[in-house]
Structures are given as C-alpha cells and as structure tokens.
Image 1: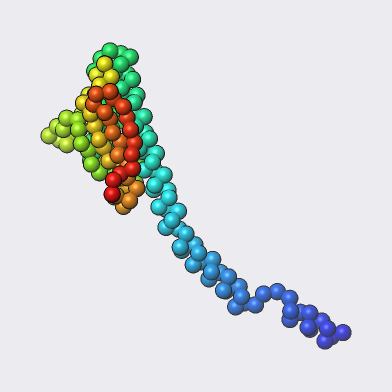
Image 2 (image 1 turned 90 degrees about the horizontal axis):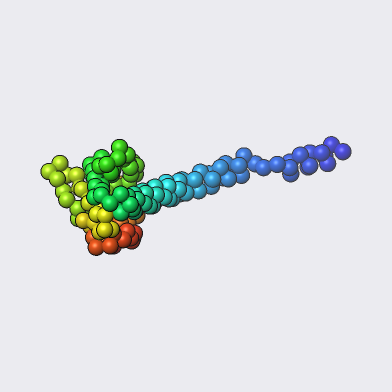
Length: 159
C-alpha cells in the first residue's frame, strides 16, 4: 500500500519548471500584444477626432443657413482646438491627435485659421489633415470642406 501511494503522489500536479515555462510564455505574449493595443487606442482617438471635426463643420454650416448670418470657425493648431466665434464652445482634439496640415481659410498672424460659412451654403473652403501625434502619417485623415457647396468629406491621408 505504501508503494502505491508514493507512485500516485509523484504523478499528480505540475512541476515547477512547467509552471515557469507557462508564466514565461504569458509574459512574452503580453509584451507583444501591449503595443498593438496602444496603437489601436490611438487610432480610435484619431478617428473620433476626425468625426468630431466633420460634425462641427456641418453644424456651423447649418447654423449659417438657418440663421441667415455668416458664421466663423476658428482653428488653433498650436492648442489643438477649434471653436465657433459666435459661441463659447471649443472642441479639443485630445492629447494623441494633432492638426498636421491646414490648407484654406484665412490665416492670421498668430497662426489661427478662420473659416467662413455663408448663408447660401458656401464656405471659404478648408482641407485639414488630422494625424496621430506620436506617429504622423501612420493613421491620418483629410477632412475637406468644399468652398462652393460646403460638402464635408473624410478621406484617408495620402501616403
């Protein structure tokens, strides 16, 4: 009986080496997956900022048409903000996102860009590239505002 109990005890459970091997595999997998998760979170933040900018442009255009008055949008590329002059509201892009290029609008000496929206639906036009701050050109989008009809479009940034 004593021999049978000794054999049963030695066959049950895992060895220390096996446990160390599994913990090592989990650590390596976590090291490889963490950067991908971080990159995905930053890409999601960029897409969210792009949608917010496009929605703001559409809203300001609608306000100009509804009120019958010219509306002014101001973009501050240094502080990563845009706001409507007639309102006390500003949209901040977030820490991971930046305006990497702005074409169109009226640039004042301080670097701020002013975009006009007219009651007939036209605008002064704008193309803005929104990128990941840590990896510009990696996950970027171009938000375009057509000057003639005010159509807002979003496209992947050309490489």
